[in-house]
Image (cartoon, rainbow, N blue to C red; front, side):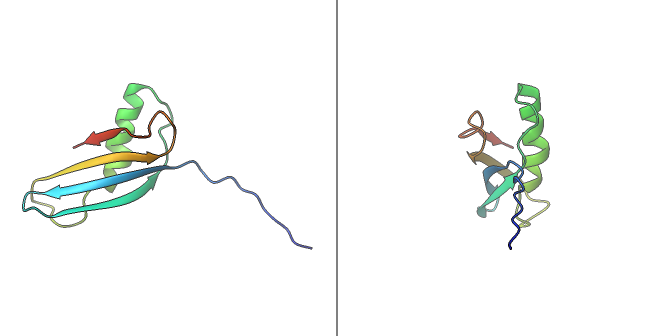
Length: 86
C-alpha cells in the first residue's frame, strides 16, 4: 500500500531581475517570490521594494552605481508583464 500526500505548493511569482552596473557589467536571474498579500497600489509597491528588491544585485560591487529592473514572468494575471525599476 502506498501513501500519497497532497500538499498544495505555496503560490509563487516568477520574476526576471536584470542588474546593470556603472562599469558595464550586466547580469540577469530568475527568482521565485511569494505574491503580494493584497493587490492595491500601496501593497504592490511595498511588495516590489521589500520582497523583490531583496533579490537584486549579483555581488559585482557594493559601492558602484547600479540599476535594477524586474519583470513578472508568471504569477497572478494582474502582475504578469509588470515591471519595476530601481
